[in-house]
Image (cartoon, rainbow, N blue to C red; front, side, top):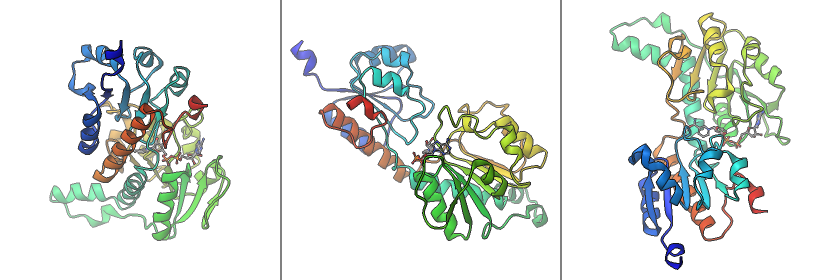
Length: 322
Ligand code: NAD
């Protein structure tokens, strides 16, 4: 028994994280990466895990999975969204769930601006045409962003970072966030409908919750300005993807930039694949060297804090430590 409790901690990772953070974990305990193991071995490894670190947003930490990890003392989510972790089940099991809320902010904000510009200026289509030897400038008439209205849904870390960059580009900002009471200068708070009716570009930065699931359905997309652009780097399930593809095909919307999907990887028959003027990216908002390192080091630091009985810096289920 004494030998059992004094064994080094076992860190189980859904997939590998930044090498510096992997090296840190290896100095302290045993590291096992589920992606490197056969699926039949996962239950055995999870049953012995002291800490579970989840990098992939598609890796679901369900109530059932938690119940198969009797030794688990902490779950670390390498990312800002915790919608793939059953927080209620973790709390009931007395397991703190840490996450890395500010680590990917600038990278996601920069990708968001990149998607807005790419769609507004049809950069991807223009690039493809040039590569095919086609030089048709008239086909790539775009929309200038300076002076246009950017509607931000969810005005937290990423929403605010996007607002700052967009303001520097001369865009006017309206935002919808029912949980924000203090607004920075130059940002006009509006209702969701008011935002959709006014914005030339709508960008989503709210978390996926039972309230935001399907927030932009068919009827919400229908009140967007004709020719408006929709960008989603938050979570796919916030938008009705079928209705969005239809609005694009019918020319009601001008384009879309989408980094996140209700199913990832997307199925080959996904409706947005065949929609006009879309830029689709494979959930790369936080895929920069800088963000990956920050997220990895933050998650490891907090996981180690919990294992040594300290309070983590970023706790997604604070009620567990009350
Ligand atoms: P945050 O918690 O700082 O901000 C989220 C904001 O959304 C908060 O201000 C909150 O009040 C608001 N909100 C909550 N419910 C809302 C609702 N019903 N309507 C409108 N606003 C609502 O989070 P963040 O760091 O800005 O990240 C936002 C989301 O971005 C994350 O939850 C995550 O899903 C996503 N994300 C994606 C990537 C990526 O790789 N594409 C990377 C990181 C984060």
